[in-house]
Image 1 (cartoon, rainbow, N blue to C red):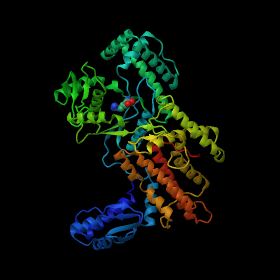
Image 2: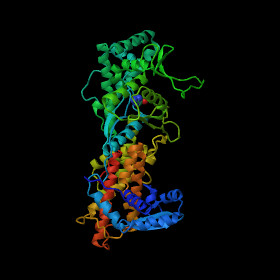
Image 3: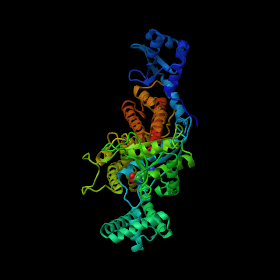
Amino acid sequence: MASVPSLASNVQQRLADALTAALPEAGAADPLLRRSDRADFQANGILALAKKLKGNPRELAAKVVDAIGPNDVLGDIEVSGPGFLNITITDKAITRTLAARAADDRLGVPFAAEPGTTVIDYAQPNVAKEMHVGHLRSAVIGDAMVQILEFTGEKVVRRHHIGDWGTQFGMLIQYLIEHPHELDHRDGVSGEEAMSNLNRLYKASRTLFDSDEEFKDRARRRVVDLQAGDEETLALWQKFVDESKIYFYSVFEKLDMEIRDPDIVGESGYNDMLDETCRILEESGVAVRSEGALCVFFDDVKGPDGNPVPLIVKKSNGGYGYAATDLSAIRDRVQNLGADTLVYVVDARQSLHFKMVFETARRAGWLNDKVKAVQLAFGTVLGKDGKPFKTREGETVRLVDLLDEAIDRATAVVREKAEKVGLSDQEIVENGRYVGVGAVKYADLSTSAVRDYKFDLDQMVSLNGDTSVYLQYAYARIQSIKRKAGDRSPVAHPELALAPAERALGLHLDQFGEVLAEVASSYEPHKLAAYLYQLASHLTTFYDQCHVLSADNPPEVVENRLFLVDLTGRTLHQGMALLGIRTPERL
Ligand code: ARG
């Protein structure tokens, strides 16, 4: 495994050296390199330098060009405009760099220089409740971030902060006590059955709770028993959790996503810490008593009436809420799991909660310069009408129904082409699943997370445009070319001149590692999706302009083009895998 410096960093280094050689008085100056339409790169740094040195920028630029000296990376450098440098890389350097990438399992992508430990909180549905599109977003974005961070060498600890605690369990458990055997364990119960059992129980107990005062009282006392750790009560609570997990796992499996049991540490997992968390906050003065509750106040958080809105860590009745749990989770993640970064993939509508929780943790010293917390906040999933996604009856859409529909549509798309490709029925079913689930994931990942997006299945499974299907077809087409190539194999030939479409594709391929590094540090997986889409677009232009297996091509041109196609395929495959999307070999 060898990491390969990108052409951009190679050029940057050479220019920085030339700057120092030509203008020693400038010190270590940044050439300010960026991609350019006119040449491959443009360096703008000399303008600011000239100002500082009170020199003529074009003259200084010429000096820098002279200092560069002979090399086979920088092909053509011209001084342009007020003193920019336009730089064209040699074809040889492009092919050589790509060949080094191809020789590495990781496509030459380096590990992060100083990897740390990130605890990421994502895929956190609620016990005894149906999963909806909001849970989809957290799971999909979170899973992609886990893969991307791990690929950069970061140690990643996953936490699924499921909603498994709260007063609603009093009602559920009490109902189960009065209607026993409703959740008795049955071997092989499906996720769907588990959820429908839970739904039935939930509805029945809710109806009773709302209509029968005596049941309400018994349910409330049951909450007290649960909090006191009464064994029988806890055992019944556990039944709800287990039944829900059967359902969660079935949905995650449908999503083609690996969730591991030890990583599911729900709200209840922090119960033992709540007392201490509150004591520390109160003793340190971070939290104060206000109207019987333990509260943290913020200068900039006020309600509509202008009065400060506190974060309540302990209610006046002694109960703990969502905030006390999250604060305890921070202590656990920092002090026991050794996190230096905490990431929360949670709906933007909870942003105020996290702002207050993080600020409280900072005041308490659990977060600081060395340990940071970020909310990777995501927007709302909208229906085609631009309103929050609901069924016609106005209910939240069940995630499983959405996935099933996506898979149905995708299977139809796959089936249409199946005969031509010669797919078996089994392959059609499997690909339909990968295409359907991929479409849903990609639609989510390809828009910036904070933005709301429209859930539009027609668009998602379209073969044209910025969709996963388009990328999956690009990959399958590559595999088909490789099969057709027979015994002609991909071989890099750095001595060959490259056509413009080959250069464009090559320069884009070279940026994979830089894009990943950026995505890993900014938590913006949509930039990886955009990169892959551009890669597929470069590939399309390349196919149009450069025939790969044409009999008119000299053998080394065929080999070199196969090499480009092959590296593009590997990059697409790796990139899609990091987004959690499969790339079938034949489609
Ligand atoms: N279960 C919550 C929900 O469905 C999300 C939990 C987010 N994570 C956290 N640490 N609060 O909205």
